Image 1 (cartoon, rainbow, N blue to C red):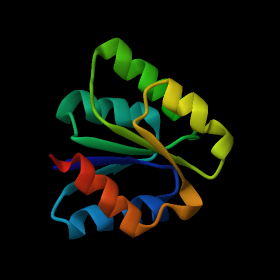
Image 2: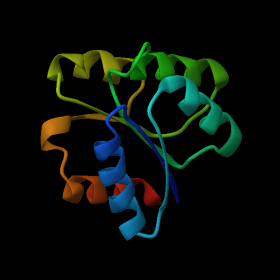
Image 3: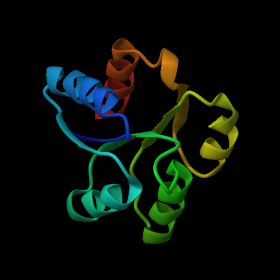
Image 4: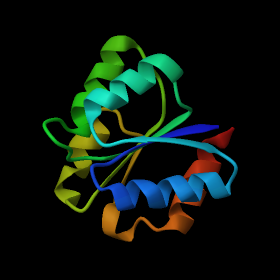
Length: 116
């Protein structure tokens, strides 16, 4: 299972990548939506975990692009700004989590849920 982690915070990306690796999943990470689109276009990950607010673009931009490209990959959006949750879900994210409370154990639960 390949998991794409999108976050401009390298420490957060590394933590989520480590959690995925510990489950023998293949983490791929990047810090912006432009790079994420390139990765998605070339490898089609099984699951995407993305921060909502990134440099220049948001996870909503990614979700809209995915709809236009007819790419159906589960997207988990995370952010410290819970006010974004409704807009993110409305635009196609499978779920939204408060980034400050999105622990490694929660990541494992979410990845297990989407593994099948």
